[in-house]
Amino acid sequence: QVQLVESGGGSVQAGGSLRLSCTASRYPYSSYCMGWFRQAPGKEREGVATITSHGITTYADSVKGRFTISQDKAKNSLYLQMNSLKPEDTAMYYCAADPRSLLLQPICSWIPSGYGYWGQGTQVTVSS
Image 1 (tube, rainbow, N blue to C red):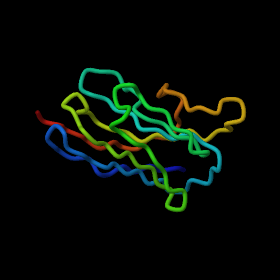
Image 2 (image 1 turned 180 degrees about the horizontal axis):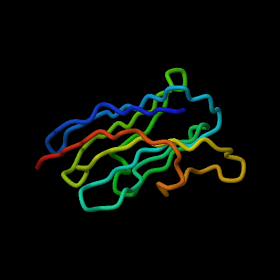
Image 3 (image 1 turned 60 degrees about the vertical axis):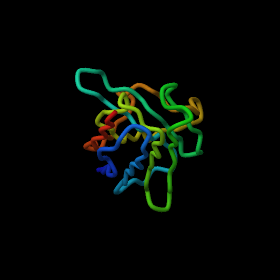
């Protein structure tokens, strides 16, 4: 059973930075997609950034140039560096994993239902 545990959330003022971490336990997959999603109160869960096991990244337009997704395979860890944070970035942030072949679809999906493993979430609050 894969377990994902996020950390690094908190409260910051607009313009500040946070770095989220996600550590996976018992993750034997060599081919996969992983991503960060967020959900604000009253809104649907949305994709923020994704990365494949080959290192191909994608970003939501709202975070391009401000957020950076990265991974450390030796540590089974996923990261999200968030800079220039805005109040609209306030949400619960979730780490998700989708172990699958990347042969036919080398880019990760933005659809939450495509990910089978989820962390419990970490809250990010940005004040103006």
